[in-house]
Length: 193
Image (cartoon, rainbow, N blue to C red; front, side, top):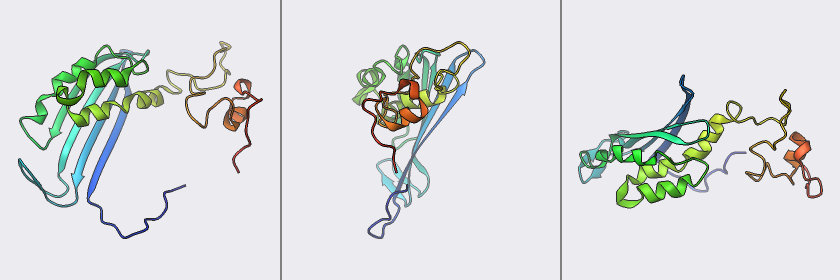
């Protein structure tokens, strides 16, 4: 269901776009490439000069290379458009500090500890925060089995995604319907209408 129609006329002034791609590498690792861009629909007067309408104020990229256990084994950042050229774009190498973190075990806190405030770029650090769920989506069906134990090896473990969001709670109707063996039937509520 889409958002409701705006209650007032409005004019687009700013666009922030986040784009994430995940690549399985030949060496068994994965690259998660994330890009954030900010553009204005009008010329912007910045301290460093005027940025024409449609030209990015920010165009930043972060790549994490991860293993199959979601450990960060390499990290790099690039700043192709910044509001303060020669200053903002010098922090990229510091994102190598993310190596050693695990995307599912304290990653967001680790990013804050290593890259918050003057230790990093606000936008790249914010971008890093969305990478755990992006990596899980990339791994789903490839690295992480999301099916209900129909594998030949007789999987006995609850599928990874159960009890990780509202819709896939084991006491809910989606699990009762799609993963019946893992449903807590004593608590299942009604199906949506």
